Every structure is written in C-alpha cells, then in structure tokens.
Image (cartoon, rainbow, N blue to C red):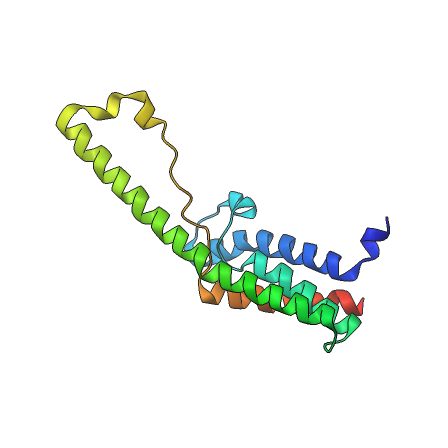
Length: 156
C-alpha cells in the first residue's frame, strides 16, 4: 500500500479524475447539454492528460526540487504530452470530423440513387472518434488544474 503515499502519483491520478469529472458540469454550463459519458471520453475542457502531467511535474518539483534531473525529465515529458494533445491529436479529430461528414454525404447520395441505405452493413458502420485532441485553451486549463492539484497534494 506504499503506492498510496506516493504524492506525485496520487496528484497525477487526481488530476485525471478531476479533469474528467469536471467536463460534465462545464459542458452543461456552456452548452446546456448534460452528457455524463464525457467522464469517459477524450478531448474537451479541461485536458485530463495535461492536468495529470502538470500535477505530476509540479509535485516532483516541489518535493525533489526544480533543479533536479527528475523534474527536468518530467517537465519535458509534460511539454511533449501537451504539444501532442493540442497538435497531433487535435488534427486527427478534425480529420475524423471531415471523414464522417464525407461518409454521411456519400451515404445520402447513394441512398437517393440506389436505395443504398437499406443495406445493414452500411447502417452498422461506426463513426470515427472526432473528439481526440484539445484546443490550446483546453490544454491551458488542464495545466492550471494540474499545477493547483500538484501544489495541494504536496502541501497536504
């Protein structure tokens, strides 16, 4: 049970859980949509990946020191994760949106042309996941969330 006394690990896990849970009320406030399944989804406000790595890095810095190699490695790891969340994964989500729209258009055209929509295989197709990455503002608030959680856990 020593793992539960690992403050950086607990801060990172709390960062993930908090960021995932808070997505539901944020969506409700902003769009008036109550979507509980957001707790288990990728993307959205705030970035749970960013909250986790910044909570981890903040805790390491506060415990081990900001001049240690462990902090340096964790910091670089965090920057890479945040860049990926707002860059590559965000672009993959945009591609998924476009592909899903294209598939819907093709299906509509084919259904109108040859009654293509009655074929079960096409009706059962699964859409690509569009909410993969994060907007820069979502990464920013994920970082703020993680830093605050890292400070709180380190000072408990």
